[in-house]
Length: 406
Image 1 (spheres, one colour):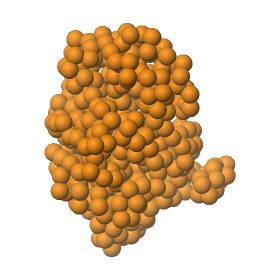
Image 2 (cartoon, helix red, strand yellow):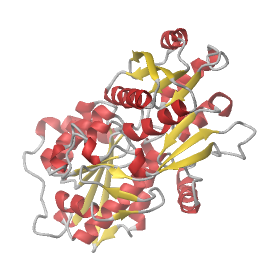
Image 3 (cartoon, helix red, strand yellow):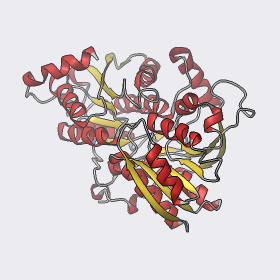
């Protein structure tokens, strides 16, 4: 927070100079500078926050802390889930610190704002926390912007499609009332209808929200087979807890958490979250490579990583590899190099960065275990099946990023 306050106070005196670019090759300013804009104190801090910093530092350490003798520098700040704060920090880091890459978002309103600033400033931007598919559609910036971990299309194409095919064909949505929730609701509604289901209603809840009682009662009264939660973080936790208190699941309706994280299940406990179906881009126990990296992360952070934190590691590591291969930290050159590279690491399976900036990779359909099924701490998911990336994400030709279709 000290860094955030200092940078905001410095806003009035922001220098107007453009960042030093390495357009002729080489590392600008004799350092590769990474800035992380995170939710360090709000509803997404457990799934993002300090754990994301740990993950990126692991990537830096894996590269030896430097590229061709040039130090890799890391700075962090809290965007407080406010687009104006995130934008101001990004501009200051560009003008005053000559940052080469910005990582983060964890809030679609902030993420879209950061992508606009970084495109204008010719800074590489990789989003890991924000879900809105608008980042590679109507708000795309394919020359400098990449959407890495998951998006609202992939979440809907996993959870909603699977549940409708099981006969859960009438839905009511409780939706976080900002860009992320709107897009997730839209994509999930499309998936439900495309697979023969119906949407009987929806309600928008302010973000963040402590009391979901009125929204849950409306959903309960709708008679829908499924109540779709188009929210995340503490909003999801509050929704699920209060749904249990109202006896919604016991009454025969099902909850579909369209974006659920490992930290949510830890906070809720398996008694409250058991049976929830979810789609995830990463699970610490998915295979040997994920288990090995997650064990190292847990030693440093005290918990298993969320998919956002694992995605942060993956995106930072591959960005740094691309800088080394390109021989420069100039944003467009590095992003172009990333689009040539296969993305295969502790996080990604069959990954590739597409022309529109979307990192397409395998996703996983999972279900939260019962208390009896769990073998110990963090043993929360049964992986039902792998969803190939080309099936999980919207096809390039069906998207609206015209700049990537030429």
